[in-house]
Length: 399
Image (tube, rainbow, N blue to C red):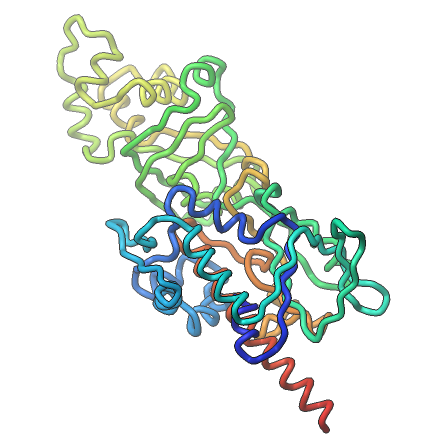
């Protein structure tokens, strides 16, 4: 996106990518249907960026969800709003959009170099790349670094840039997993019998250390190591931060969110007859196999002593999370270049003429189109920052 913005000013633009082809993580994002952006109201949309809403909001003022959909349409890709409010291309894929975009960029004169891994700068400030033909040095009037965070290293975003910038005096916050799964100390029985099973139609509540409560509806997936899935990803940032501060985090699951506690207690108080407890739970509460396993895993024996206690634990089952899954498994990452290290044009204060964009900046967002929208918007902002910088540089030379 930065290349597109800069190329429209007649400046020669070259893009260097460490991978054999560009846009690999973008293609992965479209594997299950490219969720390009979201249609919700602007204020609600901005709230998804948490403590960075002001910084990200400035990018979105110039290139937000509406402009992103118009941009896609300009590439011949129509979009639609799904039932959840998420916005998708009609074909649901990222490849057609990427192909059309690369064709337009190349037609505008943008030059792409694959298998060029950036190694830093030489003593004279030239960019140094490792290439199949050997080391290459490139001088530039301005540079945009869009190197990603630290998740999915095999697609290129391996965080190798962190020490390079830190060595130049750029403040970088530690990269952390975002939109990630968590480790749970499962019993061998649950791990062996239920790993890979989805837990559907539930809600979850998390009480943060400051006393605030966050609730979400959805589903999760039991894994060999713990839990993941949309419901978990939506709460991953506060859960991760709580674990960092206190050593663990407890998520309270409502296994039957459509039923009140009192009604559930009445249903469970019905005579069991010859039914086993498992059958009774299934018939009276809709507690299926994997939900039943979670109930026995996380509840105490005393919780089964009466219908009232059993109903209460079904409505608020404590699930203890002990750590996030590794950064490389996460959908995205938090941390990165501190916003105090860049100016309003996303130029590094310690390295004039060098700009940053995308996930390598210190912001995060949940899945739902928010990540992609802000990445596009940051590239748009950095591209305009480059144009202003080059204009000012030419003016200074002329003077």
